[in-house]
Every structure is written in C-alpha cells, then in structure tokens.
Image 1 (cartoon, rainbow, N blue to C red):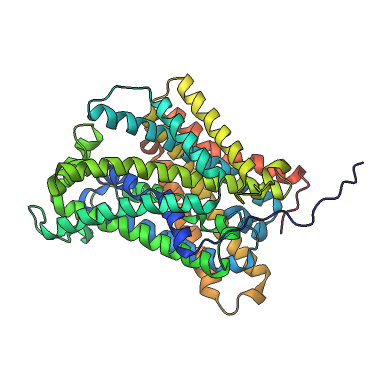
Image 2 (tube, rainbow, N blue to C red):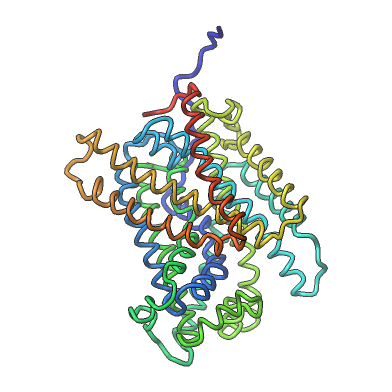
Length: 473
C-alpha cells in the first residue's frame, strides 16, 4: 500500500480580478453581439414576433431569482468551481460529482459549438469581401491556437483582451440603439412589444427558450473565486451586475430593433433572416450607421465569438484544475505555472480536448452552423438548466441543514431558491419540448443529444461513489 503523503489542501490560483474584470469575463462568455445577431431573430421569427423583448425580460428575471439563492450561499462556499462546489456542499459528494461532469460536458459542448460558428463566420466574412473560400476547420484551428496561447497565461491577460472586445461590441450596439431612438422606424417610438396582446400572441415559450440560451456562462463568476479580490463581495456583485447588464442589454436592443423595423414588419424580417434571405442585424445597422457601421459590426461579430470561446476555455480549464486538486482528475492538471500563475497544464489539456472534438466534426464533414453550433448549443442548454436547478436545490438543503447560517434570511435562503427550482423546471420543459428548434435536427438525433447531460450526471454520480476524492460536504 502506498503511503505517499498527500497535501492537506489543493493548490489554489491567485489573482487580482475585481468586480469589473469578472463581469468582463462573464458578459463576454454570453457573447452579447452574437446573441443579438443569432438568438434575437430566432426568438422573433420562431417565437412571438414583436413581443420577443419580453422573452428576454422573463429569462433575466428567472436568472435573477436564481442568483439570489446562489449569492446567499456564496460566503459559505470556499472552493472555486461554481455549481460543482455548491452542489457538493449542499447535496453531497455523489451529486456534486454528477454536476461536475455535467458542467464539463455543457461547457465543452458550447465551446465546440462556438468554434464551429466562428470558423463559418470568418469564412463567410472573407467571401463577402471577395476573398477565397477556405474550409471552416482551418479558421477554427487558428482561433483555437490563439485561445490556447492566451489561456496558458495569467488570467489578467485574458481579462484585458475580453474587456477590449466587450467594450467595442457593446459600444457599437448602444450607438445603433441610440440612432434608432433618434430616428425610429415607420411606427415611431412604440411600446407595443410590452402589451399583453402582443407578447402573448405566438409562441412566447420559444422566445424565452432562445433568450435563456443567450445567458449561458453568466454563473461563471464563482469559477474565478480564487483569482478575485475579496471574493465574498466581488463574486456576488459580479453575479448581479452580469445578469442585469446581459438581460437589460438584450431586452433593450431587441425592443430597439422592433422600433426600427416596425412591430408589424419585424416578424417577416426575422423569418427572412432565418431563411437566409437577409440579415436583420447587419441590414438594420447598414440602414442606420451606413456601410462603415455595417462593416464594423461584421468584424465585431467575429471578436464577440472569439471573446466567448476564450472565456469558456478559461472556465473549463479552471473546472479541471479544481477537480484535479480534489483528486478527481489526474494531479498534473492541478499544476500552477510558476511564472504565469495559471492552470497551464489544465489549459493545454483543454486545448487538446477542443482540438479532438473539432477534428471529429471536420472529419465527418459536419455543417458548422446547423450540425456543430446547433447541436452543441442544444446539449449545453439542457446541461445548464440541470446545473442551475440542482444548485438551487442545494441552496435549500444547505440552509435547512445549517439554520445558523440563515440569519433570518428566509426569502433569500428558501423562498427565492424554491421559486427558482419551479421556474427552472418550467424552463427545462420549454427546452425539451422545443429541442428540435434549438438543434435544427430531427427528433431521433435531438433526443440522443438531449440525453447526453443526463447520462453525464449518472456517470459523475458513479465516479463520486467510487472515487476517494477530498470533496467538501
């Protein structure tokens, strides 16, 4: 029997990220411009037309309710790892390991999807300006190498890159929104989107569904706990600010586009966009900001996708790092680079994993949008809903078992988490009942994809039963 002495505590990352730095990382993962260009036409065209802004508001409200319990438990969760750490502390090792595997699968899926999307987008942009058509996997590979370079280094470098990209993309959309308000469309400044007769007309459930997919990554505030200044204050602030910024930005911009196009015409414009007969975002930008504005937005769409994939790379690398430090994954993944103070080995492994997944898609000639992005976004959406539901349940159980930590905060520790559980069950029903819309695939393949996160949870539960990990809880 081996008597090798194990360290009492796993190594921890260090950093100086403030609230703004974490917010940049999180909002960048949500890829605001990508959502405006992709999810918004989907919510309008397949959902409730001019009432789609309400879908974003409802999604934001649900995640805000979820965040109340999430934040209330944050001071008691000393380990980085986001959902995994919360569920382990609240529900135990086996559910915690189940959620850890679900998280890795969900984040890996959405990252692979974004790599496919950005490969297609770069090729589409170059061809639009008269350049040659090059297979999308080559563009995805170049992007992956740049992400690997940045991810290997200190988190502050990634935060700076993400901050620049994020400020640029939000600035151009805010400028577009203001231009629309100054010179509204044919119906003028209208609030018809928020009239019940409008937002309840059509499939509001579909609008909510695509709004929810636009928030993936907002919870990663807790992943950067060890690299944050004063995490007990920074993480809660960053969580609330991220939800409010993302939700408000989405809803306001979606409403601005209804104003620009007109509530009677926006459904038709969105549907033509989905049919490939136009581009709601770029065409509207061209109308209000001219060709230069259109070109800028086109470029920033690419930087938005890049910021998104870099952010998810950092999240996955840190999940692996934490799990390795707890003896769940190989110990080498818990190494910290002596110079860059980053989870360098975990980052390299993450890059290798992403490369392997992309190679499979490229080898089989999978379509980068419908096949890669659509299917992987579907897997990630199911996984994220499972993660948030289980975390809300963990909050309820934790405070029930530790009443001394409630401090009279029944609403924050019981009522809001319970409401979040109910809302997330409803969200899961929306996702699964409309899953073919998310994946753009048939029922058979969509069903198989939807089961992947559930299978991941079972696999993690089994690992948690057998693995002698040093997990809390």
